[in-house]
Image (cartoon, helix red, strand yellow):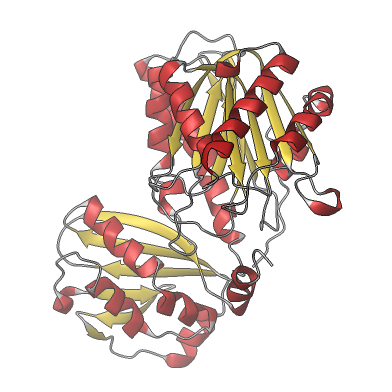
Length: 401
């Protein structure tokens, strides 16, 4: 399912970016990314709910709690710097001090993220050694290298950009993300970095980010695994020269931010480890959005549903089973299920006139829609996922070897 993409350049005015190899990855693969604002920027973030957390997550949370005004984000791939004890915290401090000196900013103006293998001490000396070269590479044309520098098992870049007019000013929202495995909706469940030239106060930016993340990054799952390092960071530097966003401006800004997040979220699912299908699980007729999401998530994380989709087997018994054990009180005699527009189940039983050849034909499509009606209310929700293939097992069986 690896679809070709134009990979839009996510460049945002007032920011420069760079990526290089500092020695964390073999064969010269890019493993260190830096994005710097040419002026102080307001920042907001959302972070993993996993109670086992990388020191980089703790660093960002503490930094934003004390000082939402930052200048730069640095990201390394190839090492998660998680479960590494005091050495992991030391690594964050050493990297921040080194970059702050090079950029002539304060360590508290720097956000840090890491991704890769858990439990391996981060050789921060390699990052520090690469800092001068990284600073020299900073450019308004360095965004694609920056996006490459955060990839791990990803097979493709994940970038997005959206520009629009607001109060006569050109507003740009751009960003890049990484994620292919260990993806599950419980905050952000990957790394995502968003940038905008809009002038936004810290409280408004935090509100907008959460509104954009919930229906996008929080609505995707590859394998039900929540990482120790998940975060989405958003920086707004005001280079557009607009007055700070007012309440009436918020919907347009949130929509632009959501559009970028939605594109990145879809790219993550399309690049799911070993994935061959993009699956949308849509649940309607629920008593509440929360219950609709719970049912959709149950189906989307079912290994049996995901393997059936990979095998192009319209086994609806696995779907209705996952609905039943979701924890939501449902009435099986009201459940309807359709697959790519073809009725499978009506009121808890096989739909009349189901054509197996037509179902098999629909299952061969790359995009699969599982539509579930609960018959209990009007609330609805969607979760996006992918299938489980032989390659998913192979990739994760060999991850550290």
